[in-house]
Amino acid sequence: MKNDDYDTGRVDDAVLALLWLNAVEEFGANRAWKSFDWEAMNRLHAQGLIDDPRSKDKSVLLTEAGARQGHALFERLFASPAGAGRARLATALDGNAALDPSGEGQGNSG
Figure 1 (cartoon, rainbow, N blue to C red):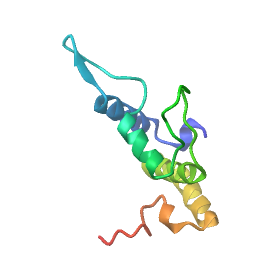
Figure 2 (cartoon, rainbow, N blue to C red):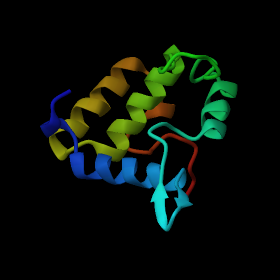
Figure 3 (cartoon, rainbow, N blue to C red):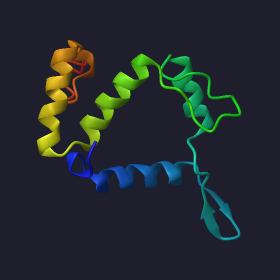
């Protein structure tokens, strides 16, 4: 995916927000690990979206469902106007309305 297909500023904001979530104060400064919250990773594993994160590997495998849902969420949160249409088309072709990047069809009634 090319940078002009998504809003890099929003991605940077999300990364910074996740870094803040994991930050601890140390000597008057905030320090964050360069990884994701372990409890969140465990919850994603329990939902069947990633393989068990408790390993010595520095990476984690996304399941098929996790990759699909992660892609849909990325498109919904960060797609540029030109890229958003492509995501809706991919969702329509996939036939999975629950992962519609527009947020419609997810059981939200209001």
